[in-house]
Length: 401
Ligand code: GLU
Image (cartoon, rainbow, N blue to C red; front, side, top):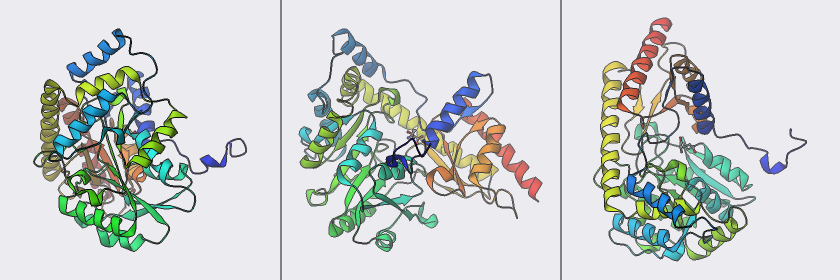
């Protein structure tokens, strides 16, 4: 293969989250009884008003090329949505670029900013695609290990330890995929101040901002004064909180020269995001009935989070985990489930798959002591999965003892 393919792909591996979910669907189609807690995808339907806006857009003939940067209605809706979450801060819609999912928004941002010899700091564990995207830019991803005592988050000290003059960027995900940990307003300010003082760009992945178990939306870079935002690209989108994963609508809010570069880049690649889906998202971001649906979905994720945490405490008391404050992931440590014989996340996930539950090994996120479980699944599926999971943990513990 290496003789055929270009050196652009030297480091490329397929996304593990996407691969595990595809494999699970394949097995389910063959009749296997597997609960899928692998991919981060809400089990809810897209809110009705948003779906209907997409259908109406098709019927009205919005089926031709969209404006490359995104329809003005959607960019205005995003500006309003983000502004409402951030104390009324004014956002210039011209700095908002709509792409085919926030993964493409992150790619566009990284490809526009980073290149050969640049280093990009990535707090670890990290979502599978960040290091891959940085490699595709021919830049170097540098993992910054998070502190296990602190929800696997990083501090300014951790960043400083990995910093050198080649560092041009930092990808910060909060609420975090895969851990569910959320940086506080104070922590965000400290990191943003550190980045500003070092001239480091922040790609702030806030796709899970609405799915937060504190008050209101999670703390954001957008809560900071302008002086902190000169080198920030904020990533947002419709997929997670609005249950619109398949519509593929991602959002970036970037300083004007970067927004222009990102738009030019996608004018040469995708010619903009799916046109009817943009109309659906334009409704999603501002419609009051959709907002009520979002609040209900977040409340349901909150209850599931509480149940998972509670049941782990009761039924797997020795298992360490990050207590999630946002997103819909539960990240737990598996090297201790076989006392005296370390178990890896990869081995654990093979065994839990055999027991009928799909999860993602920590190796996919940079640390195979852990396993990620998505609790964006129905209560019934979640209960079945937890029974199978705790059964396996008990068996592994008994076998090792
Ligand atoms: N972001 C989700 C996850 O981590 C969706 C799949 C993907 O694109 O990675 O599961």
